[in-house]
Image (tube, rainbow, N blue to C red):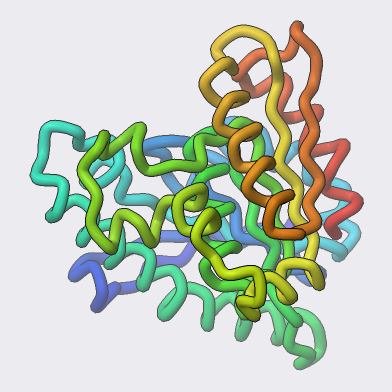
Length: 251
């Protein structure tokens, strides 16, 4: 398997940011790690093994991003405005700095052909990031796989709300999206999957997923919501099985 490590200085964040690339060609995928995770978690937690076949066959090329969660979503004792501003800087690092490099590298790997969009993928907090990036920028991202996510900013920011928090809280901004917003047509031209278990440590995630589903259905947005069994816990062993089940439909 072709594996590349890269480090770039980010003007948005004012520091070096690292990422890895897995695969030599195929559909580009941006993988978001779990809360406080790092770019190498895709490999360290063995999700790369689940994706090994399509990666080695040249059908999937995975880019793994670094997060700043410890300064943003996890820093609950910090100033909420400063935290969400820092998150938005990271958001623009991804969309304005990393995504253009993903498109460029992927095109170079595919004979110069630029992909229509990037698949976003994540588990737990990574599922929230994955969904949020997809929903905010369907011009860049054309598919999403979110496993066991919370889709509201309220878990991290409580009742405090300001425009930047609203812009990063999918349940909130989708609830107020006009039915004729052009993004709704774009969503329906793309593919998105939201899956959650109903076992240990999944109750809050299941409730959030159902709330998101209600909003999505009310807007006429097509998406696949799947609720796995009561033995399915919030853990890697199940995310491996879910990823193996859903990814072929998205690749």
